Image (cartoon, rainbow, N blue to C red; front, side, top):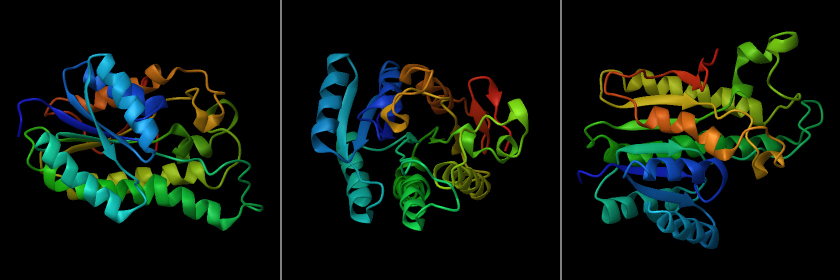
Length: 243
């Protein structure tokens, strides 16, 4: 492994993912920009390099086994290993998503990216991460996936409109992350969930109230945890998010 910390950020060509790459790059890290779209990915890499980030492009479709496997090989070839994985890529499935009206294919597509995609990428990158001295995995979730907040009343219901695809996909991701934390207990791999808050991105039609840079902050915090830091936890900027 290189002495330089190596990170991969999925969905890093724009929005929160791009700002996570900016923040990690500012630490002197080498950052892999994972994205499906060739033009957007390379444009993001150029912008990052212009800002002084040691960035490289990683063609990556989290829903495709061959793409993910190829990405793992490319990272080993170009960077020599991997220390930090940030699973940021996600889709909403579009709106509305009322349970009684939704097309089941929408739920299927959202889970394929937001949950199965995270499992696919994580498992492909684990052999590289296991060789790192301080491996970290950050799964970008959302407070809309909090069952406590979904079940709350009044001001406690901070989970947005009724929707049966995107919020439950984040609840699913939270549960999956806990299972990884249980299996990886006793290793040096720390895996946690981060909520960026309601960020203005194309994911929500730029209706959010936070900037992508603000949304990226929790991921950078979790990516740089000390060796005795938490694992299997769910955080936002203000602290732990209730399950």
